[in-house]
Length: 472
Image (cartoon, rainbow, N blue to C red; front, side, top):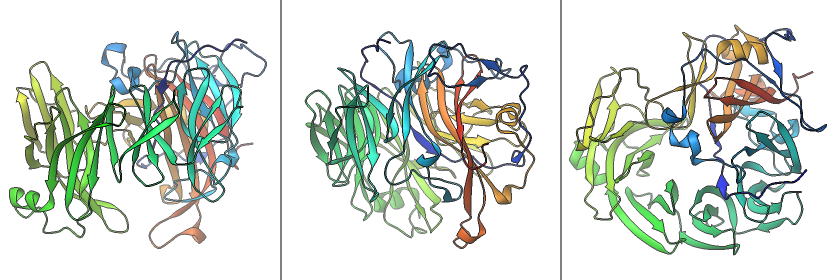
């Protein structure tokens, strides 16, 4: 089989926890009815067995109304855009115990596989691998990713398509995003570096920066001194050109908003959520506190991208750690809500209008469980729009889950990758492990982990892989 040349691209992987509801976790006998599944056409003897649902009755999604994140922004695909890469894990890839039902990657090899999915549904295994997280593609058949040593330390590496010619970059601990012709990476000094995959050289441009967003060859990030000062910056020119977009202080927020900082237990304010528009970087600057890392309060601060420093500053941040950002031909607006459901609007430019009452104030990249419909929904960006990820009938069909006691069951969604209107994601079910509890932090033992692909255009859900102690 001839492997195609690859375009430099990226797949996004964001771990999220589904909000548990009132249904969904007793294991039923496996349903092998041919009416509910269909087999994907085979292309090779090594192709794994996968099954799919018929097209869903959920809301219609087309190319025109897909958010950029799902439509084409985070794609790891071939040059002719007929397929994309994703990582397939094994039972030995994850820890068996986890607080809150969050099971991390093991220290050491993950024993995963790199898979190619063609847009007709065909899946082909390319090579074995011991890394974790998203795959980043370079020229000349090179794959860039990250892996974890036995001592728990992470580093970036690259290899060729057959898993050989591996090279480790010990000063880089993880790839965060594609940016221009290179990648933005975390480095071993807890800062940010720009990595050029052609020269395989890196340039450090921030000692303690945290990435907010990338757009083209520009990346936006913040730095904090942990004493109530946050600086938001833009980096371009392969890590060499730095522009400070503005500085925010806790004292100024308190003066402008009146008592904003009275309840602060920490001076470590930072952007808890952000959105990039054509002319502005919108941030929600605040903090979390307590051993449970609970959101406290925040303020909207808007930074012009032209570097003028004339911030729109500050504005009531609402009662949640997110906001809705709306940009139309008529204007740009930011919308927040309080506990009573009342909407507040900050008009940045023009007349953006109101937002629909059906919009959802959920942080980008998260998933929730809806107790009314029994469905799991995905919120990919700050638009307030949600997409059906798994319908109740689908996780009953694939996972055999029905009514259960959520007090003793965990169910999480993680490893979300986007490719051409498709979402690759993982679900994991755990059962309560009382011996592992730490106070009010419940411990769970992993039961089964299932990898899916959801085509948002057709509504079809495909089960790619399943493993775990509860899987026969």
